[in-house]
Image (tube, rainbow, N blue to C red; front, side, top):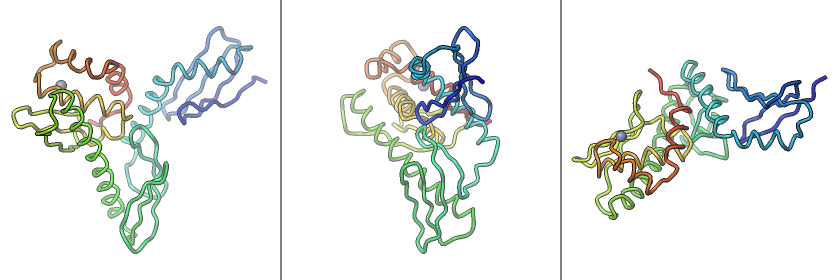
Amino acid sequence: MPKSYTVTVDGIPVEVTHKWIRSFRLRVDKTGKAAASAPVGMPRREAERFLREHRNWLVARVMQAQRKKEILGNRKVEDGAVRMILGEKVVLRIVEDKKKKVVREGNTVLIMTPSADSADWEKQYDAYYLREAKALYSELVADYTALVEHQETDIPKVTVRRMTSRWGSCTPEKRTIRLNYYLYEAPVFCVEYVALHEVAHLVYPDHSARFYALIASIMPDYRDRKKLLERSVYIGE
Ligand SMILES: [Zn+2]
């Protein structure tokens, strides 16, 4: 019988099985399930170290599979439905209550509601999600504007839009920045990159070397964040 055990990396369980192979292998299937094969005799410690080293890849692949499943499947708000918030899975719970309220407790989002209609739950969750997304986006844009333009006044106006082909956009002459609704599902270090990217367009409207040099001066690891974002979250058609 092959030896196998489960290692949890960033909340993702990975089933590790020992096999007669030469090198460690890690894969994520289309349902988002992760599994690894380790050479017979490789100590568990070493398998764990390998998984930690590949955690970015793992998180990205799992998120990608989950996003696809979610977009292709249903996004209905119902008890037990799973959503992503800043790269973390949250479970929605419908709780009967006299007053409408949405609260997050750890990885659970409680939708308190007097309604039995799922369309109302959807509206409540959406209002909550939008409010949270807008608060974070506004805070990041304000912070990066201060860094990029060396001023804390005249913060650009931030709007949240459901967009299918871009994470954000900036209209420098109007000082408005749009950030994608779905971006709030990505890890926060990706959200930070997009916010900084759009703020940097206030200075350089293009994607020139100067533009990226400005970003790099504030966020030296921006390439990693960009890469993870490109790989991890799937925007529908
Ligand atoms: Zn751009």
